[in-house]
Amino acid sequence: NCPRVQDVAAVNVQSQQADIVWNSSSDASSWYYMYGLKDSVVFDINNAELAYEDSISLTNLMANTEYDIFIMSACDNGENSEVVKYTFATLCDPISTLPYRESFDTYGGSGSAYYPNCWYRKYVSTSSTTVSYPYIYSTYFNTAPASLYMYGLTSTPTYSVAIMQPFDDNINLNTLQVDLSLRTATLTNYLLVGVMTDPDNVSTFTVVDTLYCTATSVFEPKTSSLARFSP
Picture 1: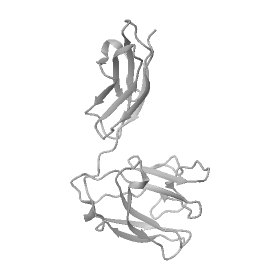
Picture 2: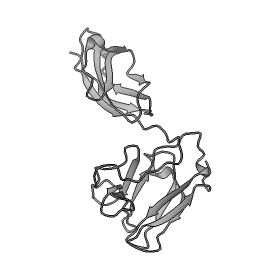
Picture 3: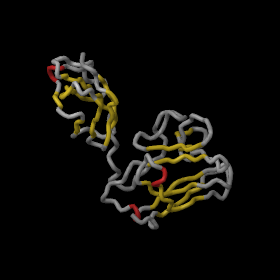
Picture 4: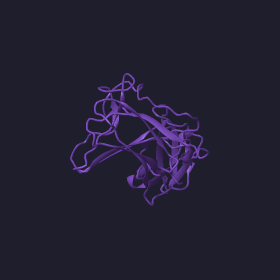
């Protein structure tokens, strides 16, 4: 009997590398593994690599790509465990070319299932809703066929956060400006523009500007400078 690995996870994920970690029984001191593009690899122990620690570092990966990894425990009693399959995705490459443009018009649909591949999103609410805000929205748009729909309530409180992929380290954020078109149904609504150091932690969001509309139900051009951001 040889227990299989548990709690497989991808950590320290970047655009071209990732660390894979897992928990395993003390009966195992080595592990066979194989990895490749999602749905393109079938585990074969004869072609598998061997790890002697319960973690491995994968390099030379492709950005914004899903991978499958298969892991099998090799126990000290000479037996092998069942194979465990785990799927993970690498991050997108940082934005390195300016200007960067996003019209939200090329994602093929509308609703919470549609969102820019390389962006993150956060929806914070005390209500029981399960909708993933923000998302691509086709009812109103500045350029056809879609826009980005964000939702918030001050009374709940409820807010949604749209987070671009990171900029390359060679680009100074405080030299940039954000140009966008903003539409609202209520003049008390506003949009916060800022910088976030950790997309998984809303508390790392630093507000640089607050944008309001002067009219309802029309798109208005807005410009926000990041010059006030201090790294």
